Length: 203
Image (tube, one colour):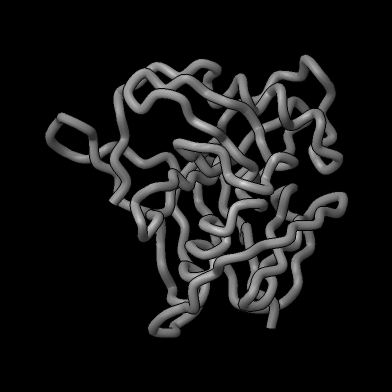
């Protein structure tokens, strides 16, 4: 279960993505383009240390981009090329925000969700009763009882996908929703106005 804080973020997630996405060759965006968060969902880090969130971003030309992020309380060694921003969180303090493709925790939880038929985390409010309304869901296609722990990643991107090579095989994520993906077990995301396969464990 992911705990959601009533917090002020500087920069906001939308601001951070608007600054970072134009630097990614697969985004097709230019500096100053407006982006809108169309949906999002979270996964649980088994260790409870890293925030893992998938964000779907609507572009001015009507495309939807897949931008998974991880949030850490300290820099991730060796992941400087994947740093999206440093963020001030009014509850948790300084956070280091990464393109999740370069974070082994993301690859681990993504692989587990795909192969076990897992789903997004339940959201609970910090310091308040009840749950947080979801802005998206995800479901894996597999039926395995478990998944080996991923501890290392090497990511490489094309025009519309990123392949994450791990110590337990590769994962392919769509960067542009609707991109051609290889066959295999899948993670399907659903959000307001859309549903698509977002990631594949190739067969």
